Every structure is written in structure tokens, then in C-alpha cells.
Amino acid sequence: MQNEHAILARLIALSDDVTPTELLLGGDEHTIGRSMLCDVVINRQTVSRLHARIVREGPRYLLHDAGSANGTFVNGQLINGPHILSNHDTIAPGLGGELLRFLDPDPTVVPHTRLRLDERTQAFYLGNALLELTPNQQRLLSRLYRSQGELVSREACAEAIWGRDYDPGLDAEALDRAVSNLRAALRRVGQADELLQTRRGMGYILTVYLPEKS
Image 1: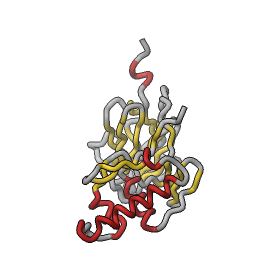
Image 2: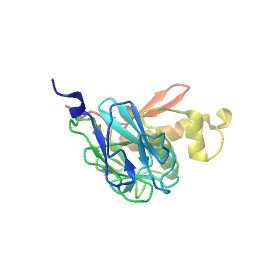
Image 3: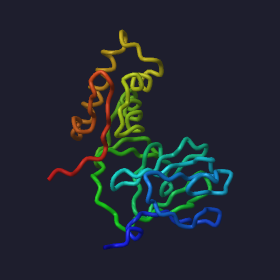
Image 4: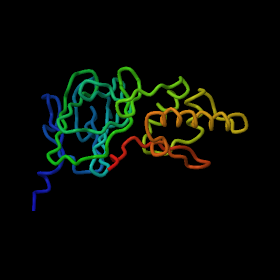
């Protein structure tokens, strides 16, 4: 049987002020930051005490910024939501350059990314097709994308669109219409029913990783 450690993903330190020099990602969650309580400790003032987290979800490793002051970058691009790590990705917590490399000796084929956000332009793409969105649709999709795979309440969606508390009496129809319009924008270039799911009376779930159609 193959050694279990040999097939675990790991982080490799790219600087002397990062410890340990290598970390096996065998747990469900690992933390990165300046605090000595973190799994990966980075002794730099540009790194927050708790800067980022790596969460394992099945075959995938998702990198989350933990509300850091200077952001988290992967391969030079700032991440604004959960980011699925790929073999040989470089991670830069803060502004000090690339400090970690992610290695996966047993990469698993994961579902195809249908929906993605270009971090630099804040434009959404479905496959290779640019989504043409109104400002309200952009705000709504951005809020759903930040919590991809999780339930986002109707209240949170309304606040993202209009910047105020949700009033069911005044806003229910307008919110339904906003969600319907977003679905229509997605449907023009893909399969909206699979990407955006409704939990009646509760909210919405955005799924961005879907299997390829056979």
C-alpha cells in the first residue's frame, strides 16, 4: 500500500522566516499567520496574526483569506473568495512576495470550473464567455460568489444589491425579479438552473464547480 504521507498535499516554505519548512496537509483545516498558534508561522509584520486558512473539502484544498489587512495572493493575483489550490500554486500572504508553494503529489481531477471571477477586472466568466451584467446583477453575483456552495439568505442578497436592510413587504418582488434577471444572464451562456439554486423562503446557493457533461 502506498505510504499515506506520500500522497498528502503539502506546503513548502519559500523563505527563511516561514516555519515549518514543510507542512503536510493531513487535517481538515490549517492556518497561516504571524501568530505562533498558526500551523504555518510567518514572522513578518505585513502578515496578519491569522492571515489565511486552507480547508480540505473532499479532493480539493480551498484557500480562504481570514480577513487579513493586506490580502492573500495566489500566483500573483489577489483572491476575494475561496480559491481551489492547484499543484505548484504559489501563495503570498500579505505584500511580501511569494512565501509558500502548494504541492499535491496525487492531484485529483476535480469538477470543471464553469463560473470564475477575474480578480483584476472583477468580470465574471462562464467558461470562456464574459457575463454581461447590470450593476445590480454584479453586486448580487459577487455576494453569492463569496459564499459559493453555501446558503446566502434573502436578507444578505438584498443588502448586497441595495445597501440597506431587507424589507419583505417592499422588497420581496424586487428581489425575486433581481434573482430572475441574474438567472437570465447566466442562461444566455450556460445552465443557470444548475448554477443558482433556490431554497424557498430561505435564500440561494451558487454552485460554480460542475461536472462536465458526457
